[in-house]
Length: 174
Ligand SMILES: Cc1cc2nc3c(=O)[nH]c(=O)nc-3n(C[C@H](O)[C@H](O)[C@H](O)COP(=O)(O)O)c2cc1C
Image (cartoon, rainbow, N blue to C red; front, side):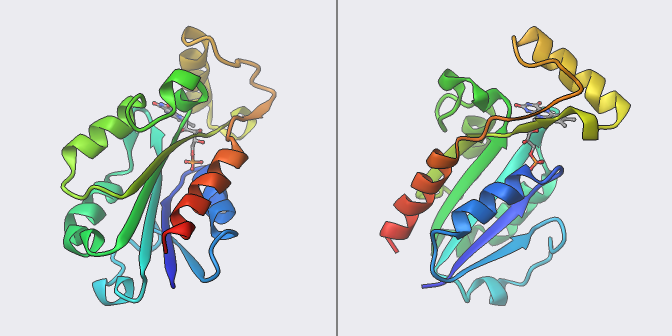
C-alpha cells in the first residue's frame, strides 16, 4: 500500500507535520506541491492513498491547493484520501476541528472532492524568522486574539499526539 503526502508550507510547519505522519506509513512519499505543482496524474495513480496538507496565511490557503484539487478531483475521489489544514486559530480548542475551523469548513464547502479523513492542526509562530511586516501583522493578530506576543520567542502549538493518531486512523483503513 503506497501513500503520498502532498504539502504546501511557507515556514516548514506543515512539512514537519507531514514528516511526522509519514512515520506511521510503511511506504510513504512526501512531495512539496509548491515545488511540483504540475505533478502528473500518471504519477499520482501509483498511490493507494493521497493526503493533502496546507497552511493558512492571511486568511487563505495557497491558491496552488485549490488548483490542484480542481485539476485532480476525479483521481482524488477514486482513492483513499485525506486532508489536513494548519493554522494558528486551531490553537484554540473550540477552533480545531473541520466543523469549527472556519478556513477548513469553508474550503470543504467550496470543493467537489470530499476527503474521507480531515484534521485541523495548530501550527507554529516563529517571530524571529519573519520579515518585519509579517512580524508586526501576526503579532497584532495574536494580541487581539489573546495569543503569545513575545517577538523574541518561537512558539509551537502543534499537538503531535493528535498528528500521529490522525495518521494511524488513515493507516488502519489501508
Ligand atoms: C504572515 C503570516 C500570516 C498568517 N496568517 C494566519 C491567519 O490568517 N490565520 C491563522 O489562523 N494563522 C495564520 N498564520 C499562522 C500560520 O498558519 C502558522 O504559522 C503555520 O504554522 C504556518 O505553517 P507553514 O510553516 O507550514 O506555512 C500566519 C502566519 C504568518 C507567518
